[in-house]
Length: 163
Image (cartoon, one colour):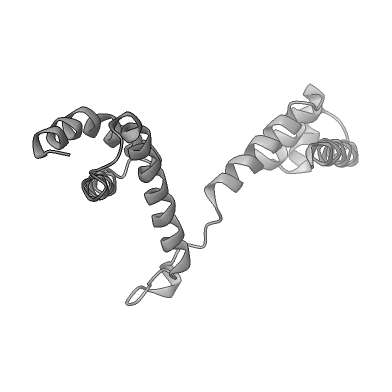
């Protein structure tokens, strides 16, 4: 491929490829730029490729480079030299947290309105059974038995969502 043809191909494909890699790298623009350069370096080395299949090939190479970077990150342990071990994050995977929150929300929506209000007051607002008993004008034992029934119903609803 002649240098002028390569330059034209670069101008035609750089923008869409960069946008694709930005999405693939979750907005890490610097990494996306590096990967674009790597893709075009490989294209330069494969200059004798058929121009009709060049664009799909560029996107396939880009995708494979992102996958290779992710695998390389997972293979190497995170360096924490010099960091205070007490301040290191112990968070679980964000996707797992999102799924768990969504499951609880879906399960809570299946409860009766009285059960939802009771669990909300006890676990979100921090009301005690005695405070709720006074508010609802019922004995504290009734609040406890209703909360037990609500938790049981919630547990059943969560169990029905399990695979």
